[in-house]
Length: 457
Image 1 (tube, rainbow, N blue to C red):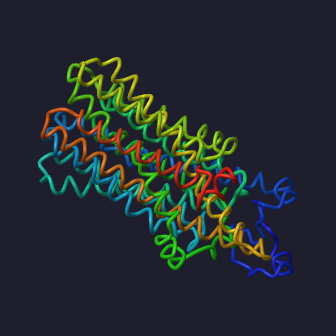
Image 2 (tube, rainbow, N blue to C red):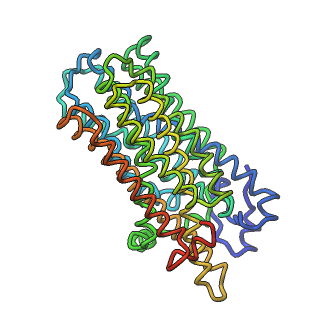
Image 3 (cartoon, rainbow, N blue to C red):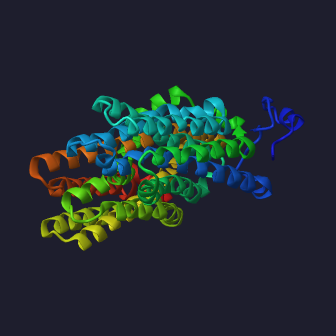
């Protein structure tokens, strides 16, 4: 495994950490270091991170497919109760993203990846137990569903860790790939679980992930690294300061629009199909949305690297608003083909937006820091990395929580009107607000947004 020797660490003035898994000197922004060894080490850690995050999303979304098959297991629920079973995992996953953001810095990225992978055994085991005991009360079912939120927390720790392995100017694509690999776990669950349920029963949905989780933990143990510079990167002080930062607030709203939409639609898509088009077998199509959105995410990161995250994000919100308006029209017309096509367009747009907004976060803090730096540019960049990493944790948590709001909007719309049309039109209006916010804060040529517009954030 590639690490710096203790002697080299001492010459560099860095503290020597125990174990070969720690890398003491890491400077990806140095071109020679990056070409000589940085790129290879970063790519290896990225690949391992993607595996664990993929399984995290797979477990997180267990109930999105399970709820469609609960009657076969002897569990009958109302539409509202069903949506709560898919909402609670989202809520817990969002809350866990805050502590999970700190975990790589506190314990080491490799170390916490191992722990976070093994924790996925808990919701898998409880899922099997719940399905094998269909007479359990509804509140117990909610508790079991809540534990799958552990998989949602993995995203924050993985992204915060991988951020430190790559140069700021090249983070769009690797962060997009890391996130896409995780997001694909959503469609993996929704695509592969229905035939597994037919062949082996609903409980198999819990059993199948356990050996894979163990494999991921072993892979992380042998092939990942901890970065000493990341272990001192930020703490609760930086996150508290970030929570008061205007840029964190703005980007949180935008990330609700992109990732909140992606995860909210992913959790709800099967229920929405069943409610609006009961004649359609939802399990045949539920996976398509998350699959399309996941594949689009690295493309969004690449576009942001090339054209600027703010420009891509603004165009993306325009597409999302048009997409949900088309879905609402399909609902009124009762057209299943238009409904599916328009929803897939929305999913693709959420993926592109996820990639572009995540590119914007470190770029915003770096651009602002350099604009205010008088002499110590290196110190300003280091401070920007700490602020950006802390902001990512908060923004990812708020974004996931936004998915809860979207799910609840659908629940209320269905219960009060019998249709999702009202919720969709409200969402279209929200995307219009996000579009205007992106332009006002990062693209207009006057006022405080000028520095960001000229830097192509």
